[in-house]
Image (cartoon, rainbow, N blue to C red):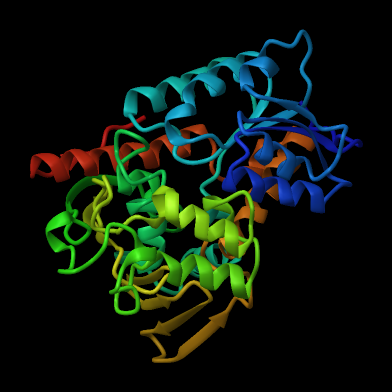
Length: 423
């Protein structure tokens, strides 16, 4: 059947109005000719108000179940941006109601739940995408085009690094919602499923076997410096500690105002609000006293189906910057830093640097290098036209990447090489 273009803006409902949901709806508000926010569901009234941006026509609900229970669909599509462990129920229920769905990654914290979502999507046939935003970055287009051009020859080996950043680790994975596997997901899934998926996408190769090693090495009570206080605001070591909370949040609110990550820790968005949050909330506790258990460093070694190989490294102990990748081919090598790619052609000895241009910072405060806007642009186009080819991260592609992560976690816990099951 030939796709027909929807002439009216695509109607969007948001489920989960936290930082990620707010990022995607900023794109909606900035593109009123293409999309319109018609509803938001979140138990927190402040977050609903932020997302609604003062528009009284945006219906507000405390629970997504209220949207699912309506007699008629209130929107063309739903963005699910709840916490990781709250994805399955709304995904299944809203797919059964016929909504197109864009889901924040990961699909779910377990293989069984992830397969349940994909089964529901397959059964209902709704348009579906996962926010593997790295697939939609202009930099990704550059790297993939270089590989696809054949200048590197056959891809033999990949080395990929995710530098999480010392302060980002402390914010999100030591003090924040993703600090514990039982609250969210393993670090490799919650943070680095992007990277495993990206390697799969740019190379066009399926990962067949994995071996992984990782640990929570530093952010542990026994590493707490002598004389450190329980809270950063009371600590005499704040100036020498790289993880002192006031260095991040007070500096940000003073220099940039009410932006991420300040928006995560307080609804007030002022210096006084930040101080109160650090005095009483989880973001002000000593980074060595948190109840975190996710790893702060991890390595995944893998082989592709064709026998070629690669490695992925995630580390907290770095600057918070773009990923770095080296792709070694039979006829050339690519060295990428998230903004440019230097290619050496073995046949000529020539080195060429390909620039992407400014696309924003690598983190949630900078559109993930153009990826957040890219995934929204693609999803809305797919819903408007009915053409699913706009979506690069559909249910089966995303499940394949998730299965690789689950296999790597089994390897890390069991100390063995694990074969990645086929979806």
